[in-house]
Length: 249
Image (cartoon, rainbow, N blue to C red; front, side, top):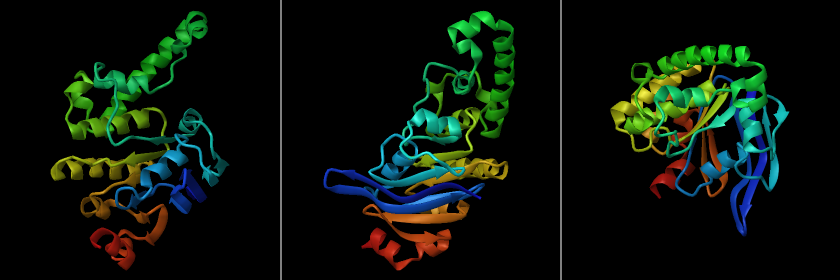
């Protein structure tokens, strides 16, 4: 099944075409890689798909639903959730509280909290159990009491993934999940992502460290100057003369 489909997607900034009639498909339960040099349009493409930016042309479909131009919170509710290059958790909260904050609770709404106290208390208990389960899946369960500011770079990246899982993500779009991370920890992060993929989570990943991430990907796209210049298996894309020229030439 095609989970995310972008057709003829276009985004302009004045006279600059940052995303130029891009067609891209992310299949359900896949690990799809999007590569390209700085300024090629990768993050802009992601921003348009997730509602951060409005497209100037084309369409975006998620699970067959047209989500083109919808606000980020609506797209988030559908289960298409992105992370950013720089993790942005609630630094003073514990790791556990950061995950719980990504979940819904009837007690968040004043009238519901007053009228349905038993209901939201039960939901809160269920959310606590779910949060511990999510933390275990990303290797953070043994440090649940620590404040987020005490985490290292790799752990903060996984906390972002945990928050996406807690929010009910079906597809997680990751912008440089191993950027600035030691290669040993990079492989650890990617191993966790592959395990999550086996459990039914789909990934669309932007990354510059293609030598490390390529073995983990199922499919790849390469962008340059707003255009898709290659697609196929990671080996096919990395050995494409156009891609080689972009990175070396």
